[in-house]
Image (tube, rainbow, N blue to C red; front, side, top):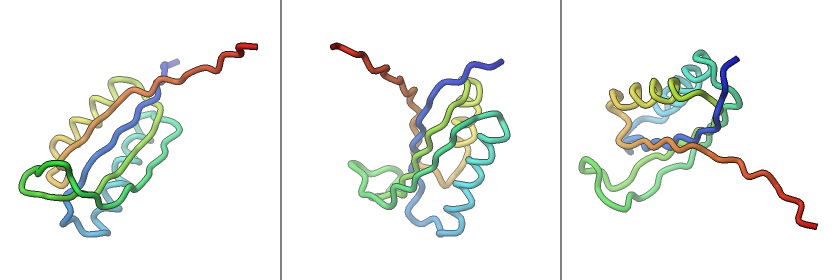
Length: 105
């Protein structure tokens, strides 16, 4: 049995990406996670937002957030795939720690 950890990946697409290309990228990464053994995959489109600083001559980008349970090797594989995709200008993966509730009284 493989131990799965909660992760959150946010990636920024170029603003000139077409809507159908945008959806195909989101579906590609969702199926990639599913095929490699991730669980509880939740994808949220955060929409077009202004960047704090220019990235490759772009002033804004399309944000996509993915929450999922996976192992570290899958996260490494996902980030490598994103690194070689020309439509993604930034990505960040963080480990989500769950806080167990403590009954004080």
